[in-house]
Length: 233
Image (cartoon, rainbow, N blue to C red; front, side, top):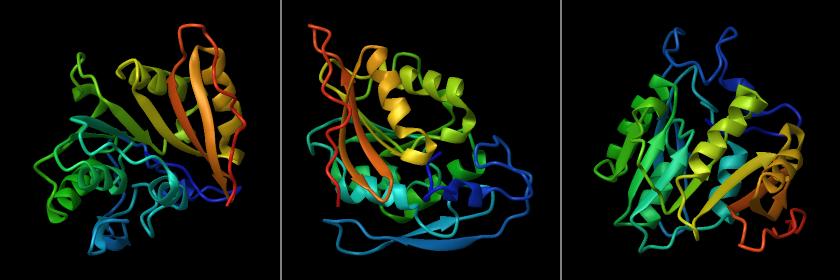
């Protein structure tokens, strides 16, 4: 489930005749295609299958690419990671390559996106470590070392807040969530909301309106890092 481009986000391009990328069971006819993902540290470009009624079917979304190119990388020693709103799998597959012993939970409500993610992970050689599931199939006691997300802003503010808090509570004390959100889709208001609800938010970098947000549990004093320390490129 990820974000979009400029004032008119590309997630809208994932709609087919009014059907959103976050539909659980898309009814639109299939239109299979392929896009290419290039990852730092991975020798060969990764070919990803896409389809109608998934997010950004024509190209890996600009926000997702920013998160992968300029965001935080996982420590190679971590054991459990998550991609929340995985779509057809670019983030989950990147994490599996960069953390070669980690199990990566790839979560999406859209069953068409989930099947594409499974197929793409297998083709990329990481299918044995990418666990693709619907939100309702995530174990209640699952804990993850860190998580990454290009979150589904268009589900609505309340649903988005519930989703993020649910996953933030799965992190350990020193764990972090790494998000990408466009300013026109509410990145700054989201950062403020998280800080007001006890999370430490670091807006670490900005590019073409996209914000990279690192979110952690606030320290014991209750203070949070500033939410406007962005670097531009």
